[in-house]
Length: 383
Image (tube, rainbow, N blue to C red; front, side, top):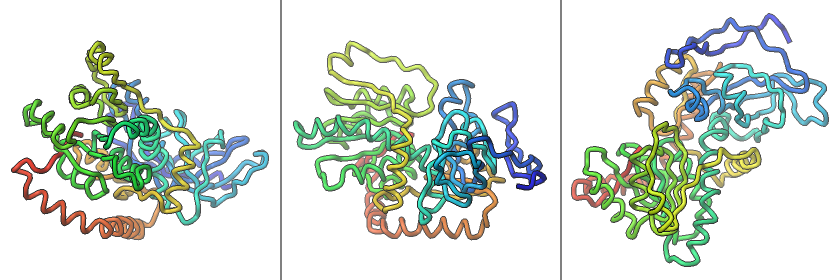
């Protein structure tokens, strides 16, 4: 490798709220002993929950949703099937999350490297290690409880709170879980109608608008009416005091709430009421590397369809994060490194157009239902 080569990277400011600066003056890193060097092609625009807990704000240090190709491999790796040019994604750990956006990443622990099939688009693969894995982990956590309830109930209601990237992944993944089971109904709640309609297009049973301008009791009654008998499992990707309070009020006896999200707010819970109703609140695990490999298999075989996403040059990262903060982006946002932007955008458009064509009939139905929104026949939710 030419040591005089340089890489493109996002210069991370000490003040995490300050803008990124794109730099191409960093020296090419050396291949670590027993490791490899990965050239990043796409990275998901997101942030690490652990970083937020440590700093008290939303850090702009993504870098833990990474897809790229192997640039170089140390010759001391035993029994290695890794070769330069192979497509890979990286299982997120704290070291990776703290690296920020780098075009080349030194990987010392090759056990965190997952090879992906050559037919899988890297922009899709980049969404798997973070949002998809967390959503998959949530559904796996909920699955035993849902199966237990199926033995005693004619219908099990599952409510996903938040129609952002995590919620959309949950809807897509749930379709594979539910299969032909017609006694499981998946609802999505959010405060954005645009996001809710997107969730409906992705295949959820119904949507519930948690309009923050409405009276709280009205929102509770609307949710209960939509679910026709309360909720058995809540997957809360927001986990704010409001969403937790609402979830507890619509949760059935022996119900389960799975909490994730990045809220730093304290939530007050009546433990006596929780115990009396035999309800449970459980944190969502971040997922394992074996689960990530299962996701790769499911997506590559076409069993799991990714949610809608948009692709942006890494130089536009500041604007992307600003738009995300203001909820101007529906679905996932993926940043591109050193890729032909024209081809990149065309590929993204083709992937999303295929999804939209498959859902065209459902979108027409949504349009009809939207005209009835003022008569309260349409149910929506909170972000």
